[in-house]
Image (cartoon, rainbow, N blue to C red; front, side, top):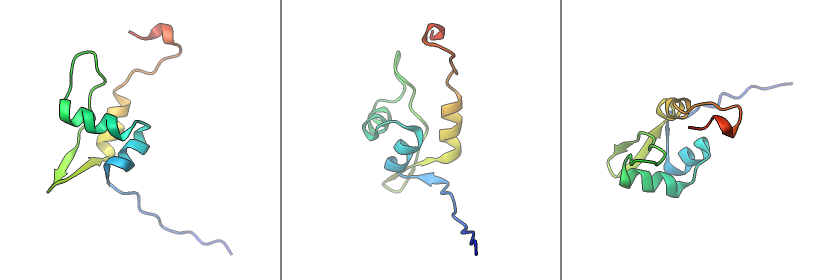
Length: 78
């Protein structure tokens, strides 16, 4: 007998979960939060603060990932 379990996808990720979701390091997320967006650097994904906790919304991370150009090869990089 097959059973289907309902697993809810969280809307807000911790730093560790967000880093895994976007395949970047936790240190990148922490550094980009502290430095903000700087010239010649990958822009920081948006985050929210709930009290002292930092959270990343799934929809914001999806939009952030989609904002980057899709390349066929490295010769296309600008």
